[in-house]
Length: 185
Image (cartoon, rainbow, N blue to C red; front, side, top):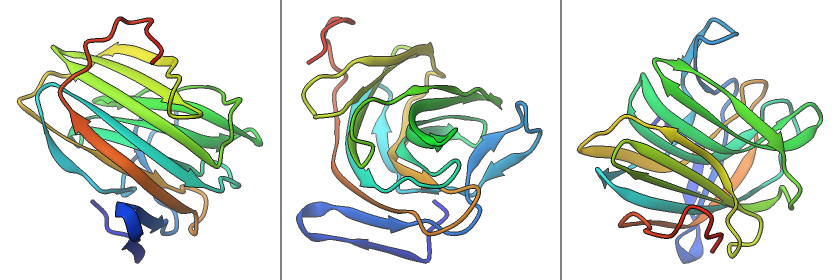
């Protein structure tokens, strides 16, 4: 979606993306505008799944961001990952059900290398992140539009510039996890 000028598949199944200028995903709330020109490499997923992804990059400018996207259509989607704001790397998510919300908090891990995991099942989204690929704290639990099929995959954008280089790897889509809510594995 919104193919960037500079991207390639790298050895071992990695995807390298360099963002174009002034790209974003956002709908109306607070800022009043709609943007749907961020970069995403999306694959079809069934109505219930767990998706997991590792990404690496150097987040330096305001709103530099990369992570995981789950999309039903232009009015119903989630983007979640690392975003640079207030001079710091922040873990966050934007859940859009006609209008976007934004939830963010400090990220204590290495902002250059981290993971995201999302489980969608029965109209519920469970979002987790990891600094090491082993321990997975919950970031968000929220209602999410139920659908027979979703689009899911890596996303990145840079609303204030272009040129953020991100390496995505270890992308999987599996049946939804049945782990207990507070199971951090």
